[in-house]
Image: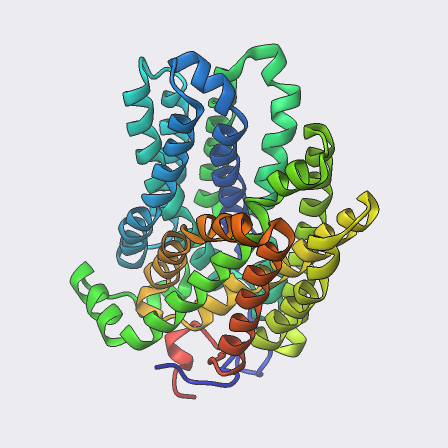
Length: 416
């Protein structure tokens, strides 16, 4: 399925690491696109009330468009991942970011709810397509010795996009109206495209490229055992993130009576901790290894369960939320590097991107399960039992799972 242990490094004749010229542009385009992807997604979450009023529908109908976008993510991961493995990373990445930004802009002028729902489904394809393409370009271009830190930087783009959306709602929405929120991303997408054009094409892709999409699919079939393992891993990891994030604001409001502004401020604090922790544990994984780095972060979340769910004061709840998300996003910060290192060379965009997005889809019932437990056990015990079980399962998965930290992505080093 996979080979365990450290792999080979990209080295010159003297054995010293060799950096790809212009790798900064490749990494920047991968990271910035993921920030923008998250921004365009969270805009709708912040505008649920405004959109429901405009289209004269129930809020649940707008929430359903969020689910549609998430459900379409695997389609995008498959389509753009296959393009990136067949034709190179840069051009599919540029097409993807321009595509989802344009669809987002057009969504602002949808004449009715039905058209808006279709446009959000189309947006979901681009949302799902970007991570695998951007992560493969960033990880293949990054210096091997910085791969862990840049992995954390890549994954922290998601909470950064969340924070930017929250800031834009306060700074842009009151002055220019809700439609303006859907147009903010297009100029940024153009900038990302220019940055990507400056980036060199991945040397690893050029050395490992295959001649057809059919050959790429054959690679998936040959590595079906590894695909199944990563799909399991990302399904449970998605339960970790959505289980600790999606219902927690409602928990703070309904179980503790906190105001919406107070909950928003707490969310800003724990997202800030999440961003910093993704960088920290990405770097830690360079020293401890990918699995041990992730397992350490999971232990942080496990230790936070008490104050996170049972805190009796605002200060304890804030501390628990910050430590919990530090652990969750610390673990996720290692994921781009870990998945790329475990993926076959000829399908390094499609393989991790599809397992990531399918994992999100398969984990989508997690919040409903958690909420059902709340009705039986109460909010604190529902959160604790569900997330405690998830964390323990992940510790087991990573304890006995494979690792290829430091492996070379270059075909010339295979078998050395």
